[in-house]
Image (cartoon, rainbow, N blue to C red; front, side, top):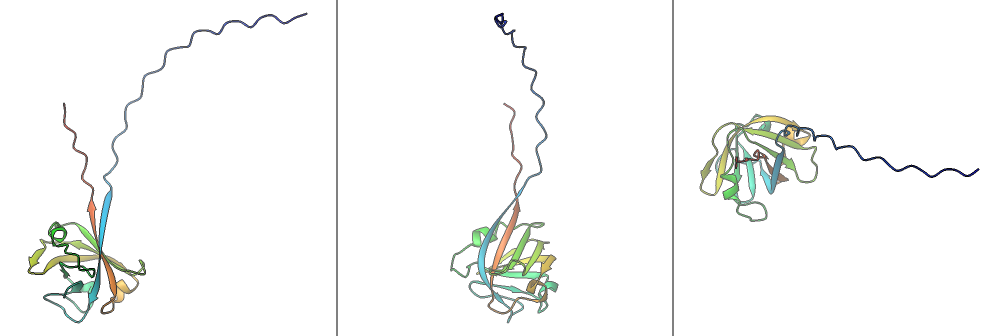
Length: 156
């Protein structure tokens, strides 16, 4: 015999309630970098236009890094250097090999001195020639690592 007709579909049930939103994750980091050259011939004062210097011949033992307001590309970043704050981090890295690096923690208030800034700092890590010391005039990157500010939401 023949099959019977299919029955009608039933009514769909109600959708369930949406779950609660999860907690916000930790804030991320952002970084900005600038190009410089290492100055290992001086241990204090003006590092020279487009240069960075350490206040110790053993770079990883330095307690202060002096950074020119002008990058090696002659870009004036004095406004950005003035934003550095205690407890922020920065990295000095070989431009052609990221394994050669120094990671620093700002441990005081940076000071603008004419055409350069002095940054009190403590080494928190290094690798490759960042540990043994960068050569004079080596092209380096000066990267500022900033924590991203949490979103501020206003009740409304």
